[in-house]
Length: 354
Image (cartoon, rainbow, N blue to C red):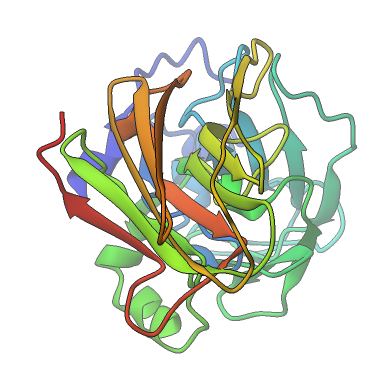
């Protein structure tokens, strides 16, 4: 897990002054714990970790943050967003008991947790943060945090307590980075946490729908083979980067292929402030009928993506220049075809066609 931890440059003059003075003031480096999420999820456990909250005397800023981020692990004005940010604020001067430097806080006052979604130049959000009492009742304690995604909201669990709900502002599958920073230490993500492994093993696990396949890392030496029975038109094959569904604001479409009974429409598009789009329409003479089997082959090199449409009687071939490399594809989604018993709906095979 060491590669996930970054020691920040620390300068006492640049940090806000701690609320506690005298024996409670103790300067030490702050840590950032980062994690890149390799698999996107629309439901299930998005994050699980365990950690320790320092004693009050060891705190610097009297707060720590959990950031579920899209497109960047750090806050950057130009791009990326905090899909969900949780800030746990501690107020050591507002305590009701003090024992061995562990502070238990008043339920009212400045010991709060705020939850919000914040954007960048690409994505602007104007909603006010939600404010809750800090569910971590004292300093100098162990914590286990689990964040679940459901259809419409997140469930946030601290040490197995009652869920705190936060409605989705953007789809949960946009989360591809986690950063935890501030007055927190000994962070262990799920791969290093036995407690998280127990929770994950007893929870619903995310599965892609049967019409999707994760193909990363895809190379120029691989061919995507799609075999199925036509159920309706158009037949859509979509290559996605950083997304598990088409979305106007998040993720990118490397290649979107729509096959109707007399035309093929193809496009590639990016999102963000400098979004781009390119497309192409091709007439064809293929005889396509619902209920008949069809074979689609796709292979590419750099931005050029070649395709073959094969029916019982004909073969149609052509190519398309995408805005992104073929190898940028993370997920392939198919619509308008049903799987046959003999073949996989989507398969990735090695090819020498280059």
